[in-house]
Length: 136
Image 1 (tube, one colour):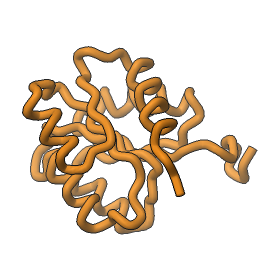
Image 2 (cartoon, rainbow, N blue to C red; image 1 turned 120 degrees about the vertical axis):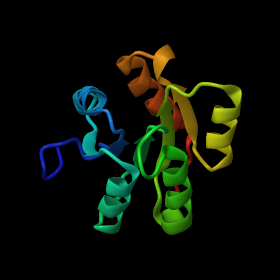
Image 3 (spheres, rainbow, N blue to C red; image 1 turned 90 degrees about the vertical axis):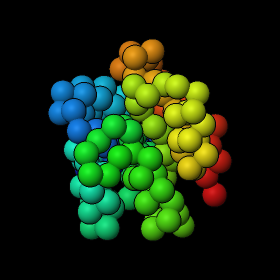
Image 4 (cartoon, helix red, strand yellow; image 1 turned 180 degrees about the horizontal axis):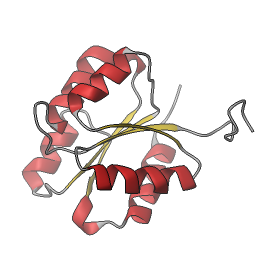
């Protein structure tokens, strides 16, 4: 165990979604799977947390949010924090081919359609994407 009572190898995830119910549900699922969870209910809030020193290993980002949508957040992370960024996974109800291609084209490492994945499947998919990613 690490100094804060979590496994040493635990990953930190930043869940960004304006739906508080979903944020709470995914927070619980990822916590139960050993992740250290940070949350933000908007793209702006996520950027402020990152600027304040939050350095997640994984960003789980919704697309449809007010002010700064998930696509803009992905671009922002890539532009401002690319040298020190984690894995970016978009979790959205926007499941059209164009949306998926846009998200991946902007630099997301994965794209999960909410409607076709249970919370447990989301956790497992993130683990799979993380396992396939090569860290230096």
